[in-house]
Amino acid sequence: MNQKDILKNVDHTLLNQTATWEEIRQILDDAIAYETASACIPASYVKQAAEYVKGRLAICTVIGFPNGYSTSSVKIYEAKDAIINGADEIDMVINIGFLKDKRYQEIESEIRQVREACGEKILKVIIETCLLTEEEKIKMCEIVTNAGAEYIKTSTGFSFAGATPEDVRLMKAHVGKNVKIKAAGGISSFDDAEEFLRLGADRLGTSRLIKILK
Image (tube, rainbow, N blue to C red; front, side, top):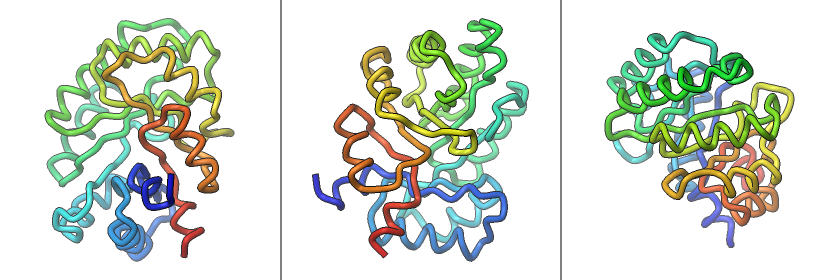
């Protein structure tokens, strides 16, 4: 797999709290130039970014981010607002405390509602694997599959660890056939990226690959 093929599966990402429009615009320009799958940026920049790219690039944003403990109503509103502003893809964070409490129906209901709010747009569900047991990861594969989201995503990149090959391998074994996998957090080389794709990831969240090329 060559570098161009790998970049087609990348959500070129900038979610730092200090991100400025100048930095966001550079991410967008690079994502277009290197033909990545999307650019993943803060919701506050989605409208400006969508107007800037004029359909040349998919715009991804995050909701309930990075902690996941916003109420369902807030997450639904965030998703609708982002889509109105021009987002093509939504990455939402689950309520991890609810998962620890085994409130599975509430988690699934929340994902379903956000999925409905997304309409024809893509929904990726972030489960923050580094905070979960293997049992909890497997349960989330089941819940995300049942809720109808397009992707399950490993990590926000804001906790103490990101994607691991073991997590992608586990997800691949337990998600439904219609659910894809996004690995994010800590992907720092093309070798890493190729390994994740080989193991079954369909998307990669990273900013480092284009930095390497530049």
